[in-house]
Image: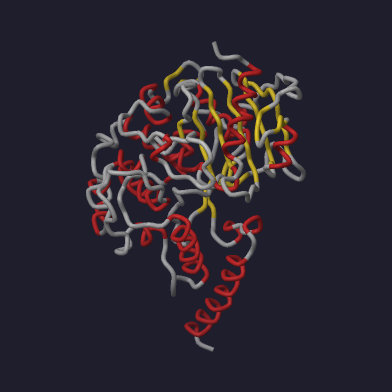
Length: 393
C-alpha cells in the first residue's frame, strides 16, 4: 500500500474519531483529547505563590433567587460547581473542590481566555509594541485585510464590535469541527486557525463600532494581530507577561491547532488558584507586589465603563437574560449596579468575579449546562460573599 493511500486511510479513520467526539454530550466533549496543547510556564518553584489560607466561615451567607434564600452549598449543587475559591485581600478565605478535582487540577477556561488575551493586549500597548488600540489590526497582521477584518481596530475588536459576519452559536462549533478535521486528516480537509480568521466568508455585516455582537472569531483575529505585533506566540506571552511575574502556583497549557497556532478565543487549561491570582492582579489595579505590571488606566478601562464606547447591559444580548447586569468592555464583563465589580466568563459557568473596592475575588469552575449557566445567580451569591467579607460603605 502506498504512503498516500495509508495517509488517506488514516485520515478517514481519524475523521470518524473526530465525528464521534463532536457527537458527545457537552460535558464529555474534551477538545484537548484530539488537539495538542503547549506549556505556559510559571517561575521556578521558590518564586511560586502558594496562596496563604485565612479561612472564613461563609455558611451563613445567603442570596436571593427564584423566590428562595439559598446558600453556597445550594449554589454548588444547582450550578454543577467543580471548584469554588474565594480570595480576600489575596488570601484564601474559602476553597472547595469537587472530587476528583483538586487544587492542582487544570480546568478548561473556555472564554475566560479572552480576558487573558485582553491583558496581553494591554501589556503590548504599554510596552509600545502596539502603538494605539485605535490602530487597525491589519497594520500588524496584513493577512487580516483579506476579509471583513480590514480596517477593524484593536479597540473595536476588544469591544466585540468588529462587524464581521459570524453567528456565534453556529460558527464557533463549526470552527472546532474544521480545526479538528484539519488535525485528524493531516491537513487534507478542514482549516487551521489562521485560515479560519482569514476566511473570505467573514465579510462585513455591519459598520465596525456601531453595535455589540459577541463573536469568538474576533478574539482569534485579535490574538493573531497581537502575535504579529510582539513577534511572540500567545503561550510565550502568557508565560512572560502573566504566569512568571505573578508567580502562578501551577503551570498551565494552551490548546493549539495542528500547525501550532494557539487558540485565543478559549482553551487555556489552568488551576483554579491560578485563575484566582489573575483576578487578584486586576483587583489590585494591575499592581503586583508593589510594582505596576499593568497600567491602572488600562485595568480601569478594560473592566468598566470608563471608555465611552464600552457597552452597557441593555446593548449586550445574552442568553437567558432576566436582568440588565452584564455590560462589555475590553473583553471583560463589567457589572451594572455602581459597585465597580466585573467578571470573566466562559461557557458552562466558568467565572472570575472581581470586586476591587472590597478586594474580593471569586473563582467558579463548573460543568453547568443550564441556559445562561446560572451566571446571574452566581453574581448574586458572589456579591453576598463580598459583602460578608467587607461591606461596602
